[in-house]
Length: 53
Image 1 (cartoon, helix red, strand yellow):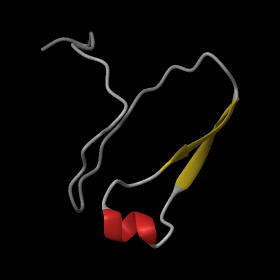
Image 2 (cartoon, one colour; image 1 turned 90 degrees about the vertical axis):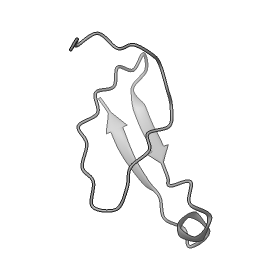
Image 3 (spheres, one colour; image 1 turned 60 degrees about the vertical axis):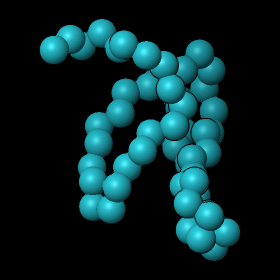
Image 4 (cartoon, helix red, strand yellow; image 1 turned 135 degrees about the vertical axis):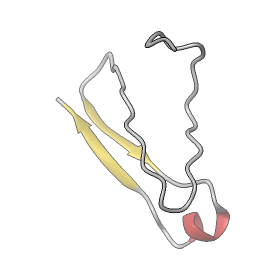
């Protein structure tokens, strides 16, 4: 097992009740939006954001 990423992706697949620790590195500060790709959930307005300082 290695701590070096084997690939780059911008979509993380998560199942119900799963938890993950994700590490990000950003070039710029600001607010970044995230949202689900399941149609029913996304159409109901589910989204969030985090702020990079």
